[in-house]
Image 1 (cartoon, rainbow, N blue to C red):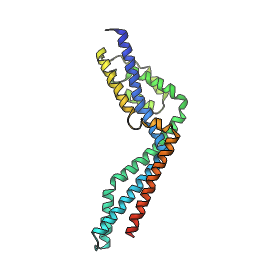
Image 2 (cartoon, rainbow, N blue to C red):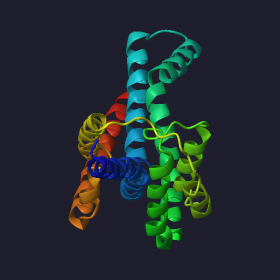
Image 3 (cartoon, one colour):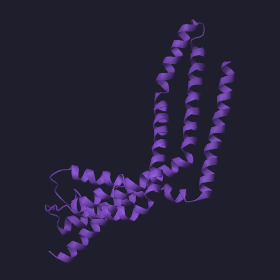
Image 4 (tube, one colour):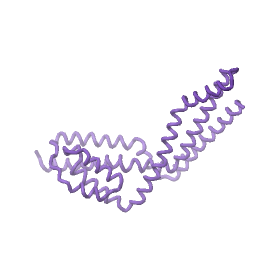
Length: 236
C-alpha cells in the first residue's frame, strides 16, 4: 500500500466529513434562522389565513348541506369538522412558531460566539480526525454524540478535551474503500447544497431578493384576506 496516497486520501475524507457535519450542524440552522428572521412571522400569518378560510368553508358547507337542523347540532358538527379538517394546518402553525422562536436562539448564539467560530471549526475538525465513527471503532457511541453536542453548543473546552483522546482502533480502510467513500461523500455534499435551506444562502445575501420575496408573501396574504371577506359575507 502506498502510505502517502493513503494518508492524502484519509485527509481528504476527513475534510469532507467535517464539511458535511458543518453543513448539517452549523450552516443549515443558521441559514434557516436567517430565512425565518426575515419571513417567519409572515409565513405564520399566511398559514393562519389559510386555516381561517378553511374554517369558513367548513361552516359554509355545513350550513348549505344541513339546513334545518337544530342550531345545537349544527354547532357540534362545525366544531368537529373544523378540528378534523384543520388539524394538519394547526400543527404546521405550531411547528413554524416553535421554529421561529428557536431561530432567535440560533442567531443569538451565533452572534455571541462569532469570535470563536474559527477556533470551534478547527477543534471540531481535529475531533473528527480522531474519533469519527466512519474512521474509528468507538467503544462508546456517546463520545461522538458528546463531540457533536459540544460543537452545536459552542463548547470549545469539551472539544479541546475530546481531541486529545487517544482512540487506537482505526477501521481497516483500504485505498479502494477510501476512494469510493470520498466519491459518495462528495456527491452527497453537492446534493445537500441544492436542497433547503442551503440553496437560500445566496438569496439571503441579496437585499433585493429579500424585499421581493417579502412583497410576494404580502401579496398572497392580501389575496387570502379578500377571499376571507367574500366567504364571510356569504355566511352573514
